[in-house]
Image (cartoon, rainbow, N blue to C red; front, side, top):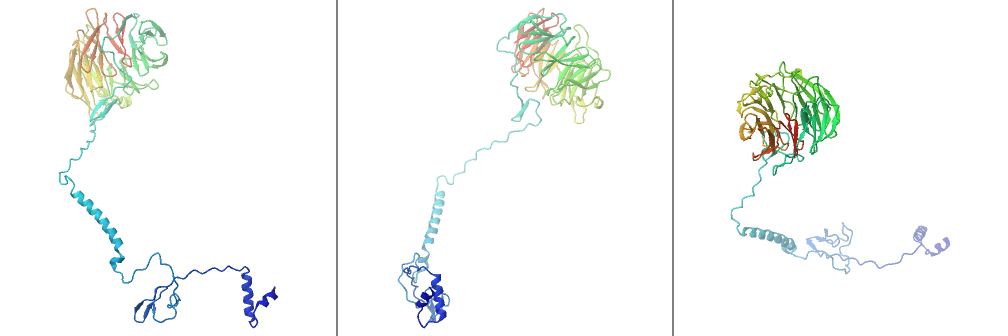
Length: 521
C-alpha cells in the first residue's frame, strides 16, 4: 500500500509534501460527496460617509477609502456581489424621514389615547352626571350589648337579657280543665308526697318510701331501706328523703336507695342552686346549715350560726351567696314567733372564714329569696306584711333597703326567671302578688276565694299552681303568668301542699288533714 501511495505522488515533490498527502488520505478514507455551495449574500454597496472614508458592505463599519481588506471583518470592500434574495427585514430606505420610520408606534399610541378620551367624554356626558349622589344604604348599627351580666339560663338579645325556656319542660294545660285523678286515700302516717313523673308518685311513711300509681293511686312498691321519712325534696335525678338524723338518697328512675347521708340532726329545709352541684340543708336543732355535694352525696362543710335555730334557706345560682332565717310558719291559732334574724353567708367558704353577718328581722322572716346573680336578696316578714330587700356591697357588707309592702301574712316568695319577677303568696291576704325584681315594684295582684296555702311555679315560668282552702272543700288555681288570668278547679277536699313533676306536666295536691292526694295532668 505504501508503494501505491508513493506512486500517486507527483515526481519532483519533496518528502514533506508526500507525508502530508499520505496523512490526509488516511484521515479521509471515504470520499465526501460534493455539494453546491450556498450563494453568498452580496454586501450592500459601499456608501461614502465623508472625504476619505467608506462603509464596509459586510460589517457596516467605517473604513478608510481605498483599503484592500476591512480591518474589522477581513473582507474585501470591492468584492463582487452575488445575487441574493431580499432580506426578511429590509434596511431603511435611503433618505427616509423620521415619520416614515416611526409611524406604527405613533398610530398605536394615538389609538390608546383616543379610547381613553372617548371614555372620559362619555362619562362627562352621562345622564344625571351632576345630580346629587344617592344616600348610601344605612349600615346596620352594632347589636347593643347588655350592660349587666345575664342570669343563668338567659341570653343577651338586642341589649336585653332574655330567659331561654328549656325545651323539655312545660306546665299544666290551661286551654281546658286539666284531668284530675283522685282523691287517693293515703295511710294515716303519711307526712309528705312528691311526684316522680307522670305515672308515679312517692309517699313518705314510717315504714319507708311507698311508690304509687298516678292513675289509680295503688301502691306499686315500698323502699323499706328508708324508714321514718318526713320530707321529700327533688335534687336533679334523685330524691332526698329526710329522716330525723339522716338523708336518704333515692334514685328517681329505679326508686333504689343509693346512699345515706348521716347528719346527726333533723333537717328543716333543703335548697338547691341552679347549677345543681351544691345543696344547702338547714339543721334547726344544731343551729347550722350543712353544705352537701350532690355529685357524690356527702356533707362537705357545716356553718354554725350561734344560738339561732335557722330554718328557711335561699341561695343564688353561683353558690357563693345565700340567706338563712329563723322564721317559721305557726300552727293555726298560735301566735307568731317573737323576734327574727336573717344571716347572709357564703356557702363556698369554710365555716371558720364566714363574716358572721347577723341582720335583725323582727316580724317572723318566714321565707327568703336570692337573685340568681347574687347581687340582692329578699326576706318576707309574715308578721309585718313586708318584703325586706338586702343588697350586697362591693366591700362584702350587706345593707337593708327600703321595705316593700305586701298583702297580709306573706308566707312564701318564689322566683320567676322569665322577665325577672318574684311571686309572693299571702295566706290571710288570699292572693298572690307579682313583683318586678329590677324596679322593685308591684306588677299585679291576683286574689282568690280562699286562703292560699301553698304555691309552686312551673319550670317554664308560664304558670303558678296555688292550693286554696274553702268551707269544707278546697281547690287548685292555675294562674297564667303572662295574662295573670286565674282558673280555679275544685277538688272536693282541702289541699295543703302542691308539688310539680320535674317537667311541669303533672302536679300533686296533698291534703295533710284528710290524708288524701290528687293528681292533675
